[in-house]
Amino acid sequence: MKTVSKVIACSTALTLGITPNCLASTFTPVNWTISGSGTTNTQQVNLDEYNLSYNLPGTEGFDTKTWTISTVANADGDYAFDWNYTGFHSYFNVTAFLNTFNPNTTLYSAGPSNCCSSPSAGFNESGSFTFSNISAGQTFGFTLGGSHFDSALRLEGNLNLKQIAAPVSVPENNSIVPLITLGLFGAYSTLRKRELQTKLTRV
Image (cartoon, rainbow, N blue to C red; front, side):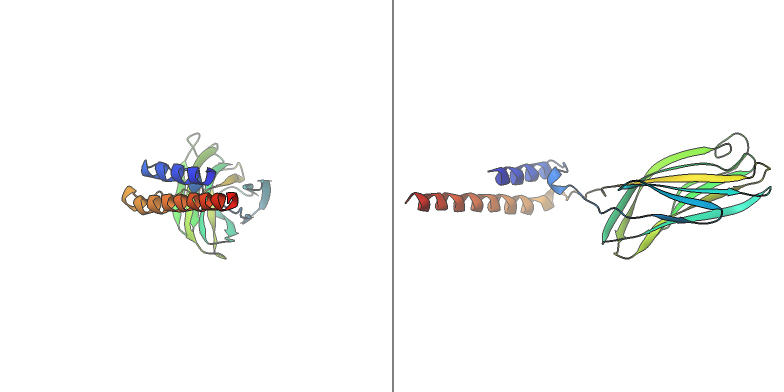
């Protein structure tokens, strides 16, 4: 009866346009690396969460610098992440950006600005992004960085990535009808088999 109840509950939820637990998405965590100028660091916070940072000291005035954060898909599917990009790119003529690749999407782009309008004097930006239809073995990820032109001599930042279950697409109601029919038919067949087995046992 538990199986039957689950089928009916799932079918009913779909009919009402609700994504039930029976369609819950799962994911396999990926491993991240960061590359670029200066000092870079990769810290695995949890199985599904990473901090990836850069720190570039130098002489007065930085042209745009870019760091690459990448991973390789371990299976076909969608890969979804919550991200938080924080950093300090000094005070004068400051820029900062965060993009994805495969596909190429701009998540954050700001500046040039002066003290003390963000990203000048520091920035803190958050969001979510899903890499869709990724193939196993495919490389994807983020590019980030920025520039400044003053004597503070600092470009530093950190990208926190937390992998989450990719959104589940709920079919339109008219495409749910066959699912409900098949589900209820399967549940009915299971019940009938159990009833027959019980009768045969009693005989």
